Structures are given as structure tokens and as C-alpha cells.
Amino acid sequence: MKRPYAYIAGTGRGVPSKVLRNSDFASLGLETDDEWITSRTGIRERHIGTDTENLTWMSVKAARQAMSRAGVSAGELDLIVLGTVSPDHLLPSTAVEVQAALGAGRAAAFDLVAACSGYVYGITVAENMIQAGSAETVLVIGGEKLSSIVNWKDRSTCVLFGDGAGACVLRRSRSGAKGILSTYMRSDGNLARLLWRPAGGGASPATEAAIADGSYWIHMAGREVFKHAVRSMSEAYDRALDLAKITSSQVDLLIPHQANLRIIEATAKHAGLGMERVFVNVDRYGNTSAGSIAIALDEAIEQGRVKEGMTVALVAFGAGFTWGSVVVRF
Ligand code: ACO
Image (tube, rainbow, N blue to C red; front, side, top):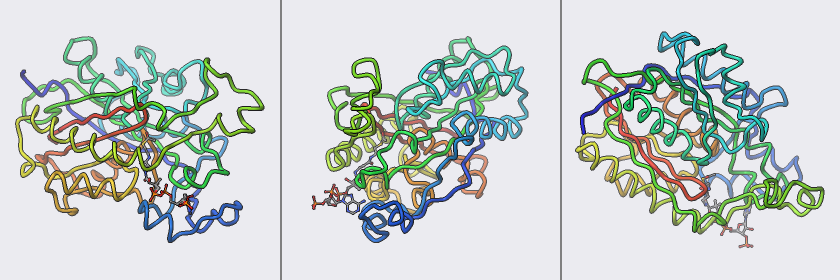
């Protein structure tokens, strides 16, 4: 297969200003502490959106920055794909709210539900649409307002998550030098109940009882998720490299999903990469699900960790289970 068909022309991020530190949970009445959270997850703080800093707000902020860096105007967008599991409304998609706010009059827009793999899945769909000739310029966003769907009384989940969005503009490649070298996606719905919201959808609508008994919020079997996460991240890394016909020694930077430092370290070890070739910001954001790799890629570029000519691997896993990867040359 001839590649690349598409390249990343610009990135951006939109993050709420309020920071919630580990030490702040005590004032929320939760029995937890900085030592427990840091030693098990590597998370020190996370951003939490206000009512006005909703997913549309974060996504539009990220999108405007990505479009400005790509030199792309709203009228040039053919498609907007927004990976999220915490949309502003269940109907319609948040992607159409973003489309309206940007004034992207020609763009089709939809949300994509793949949990923490949402951004990698989104890039894959966008690249395939470009390859098929259905689009030239696509805005891909990954973002979440997880603070609105976590149970703030459940210390085993609420300390892990945060809010934020990142975006990139994908354009058709004109030269073969840079762009997406491979993409890989998988899922296993047999694992769906390990990380889910039992109530709130059509099968079990939102009721006062569902909110009171906690089934409306995120539920997670942490240890099981951990095991599958390491396995699927490692597999996704290997497959994307195989498909790109490169070896680990040719990867300049791994940007893994930022859920837990121990999962990131295990993935790096599997890949045979020293941590100096792995991007980590989970300490400052927690797990922002679909926002995670999108924010991390934008920060990595801004910090000069990604430079022209470098090869970068994006590796994700999330609820579903879903997992996937992208290898891209900048
Ligand atoms: N503070 C203090 N104690 C806590 C906390 C907390 N915040 N949370 C749980 N505990 C307690 C538990 O109650 C338990 O106590 P017990 O032994 O008396 O019952 C004890 O700590 C140990 O709990 P475990 O769940 O066994 O702890 P573990 O070492 O497995 O770490 C963790 C838990 C951090 C959640 C880990 O399993 C993990 O990171 N799993 C992966 C989670 C993940 O990555 N999720 C994101 C998936 S991606 C997506 O799609 C959103």
C-alpha cells in the first residue's frame, strides 16, 4: 500500500484553567491522599472545566489553534471528527456544535465513541476518508469533560480523570516525505463491562435512582483494566510498526495514552524504549480519555520534542475495549 496519503498540518489544545491537585480531594470529603494517587498512577493534578468550559468550548479552542498553525480556514474543512465519551448533549453531537461555532459551513461533522482511543480512531477514519478521495482537509478532535460523568464520591475512579481537548488538522499529502505511515484499530466488546456507565443510555435511562445508586457514573474494574491495557498497548505498538515497516530503533518518540504512569512504563519496556523517548504528561492532566494523546502530541510539538523528520508512534487503549495506533513522520 502506498503511503502517506495525509499529514498533520497543525495541532492545538483547549484546557480549562482550574487545576485540582491530589491534596484538594481531602476538602471534597474523600479518603485519599497524594502518596496513594502518585505512587499508583503518577498523577499529581488534573484540569476541571467550569459550566462554561464545556466540551464545545475546549474543542473550539483546540481547533482554532490547530487551524491557525495549519494555515487552514474554517471554510476549507470537509469533515470534523470528534472523539469523545462525554459529549455536551446526547443529541445532537458535539461535533456539530463545534462546526457551527467555527463557521465550517462545508464540513460534515460527527462524534466518534471509542473512549480513550477516540483520537487515534479519529485520525484513522480521517486518513481513510482522505485516501478514498472523500475529503481533502479534516479536523480531528479528541476531548472530554469527564468531570461531568465521574462519581465524585468514588475515590477509586474520580482521582484518575481530568478534562481537556486536543486537535489536529489532517491534509492530503502532496509529497511523500511526511505524513501518516500506518494506522491500526481493534476492539473487544467482551470486555465492555470492565469500564462503563451502567445507566444513562437507552437500555437503562437516567433516573434519580440511577444517580443515587451510582450506576449513572463511570464504573471501572481497575486491576483488570490495567492488565488488558498493557497487553493491548503493546500489541498496538507492534502492529503499527509492522504496518509502517519500521523497527523500534526508528521511533523517535512514543506518545502513549496517558492513563497511568505504570502502564506507560510497561509499554515503553515492551517497546524497548528508554523513557527519554516517551512523552509523559499524565502527572499534570490525569486521564483525559480521548483528549489524552491529542493534548500530549500538541505539547510535545510545542516543547520541541517533535521536530521535522522525526517518526512518532501514537498508541491508545480505552473502554470498549478499544485500542489502536498511528505511526506518523513529521
Ligand atoms: N485513595 C486511597 N485508597 C484507594 C483509592 C484512593 N483514591 N482508590 C482505591 N483505594 C483503595 C482500594 O479501596 C483498595 O483498598 P482495599 O485493599 O482495602 O480494598 C486499595 O486501595 C487497592 O485498590 P486496587 O484497586 O487494588 O489498587 P491498584 O494498585 O490496582 O490501583 C488503579 C488502582 C490505580 C485504578 C489501577 O488499577 C489502574 O491504574 N488501573 C488502570 C486504570 C485505567 O487506566 N483506567 C483508564 C482506562 S482508559 C479509558 O477508557 C477511560
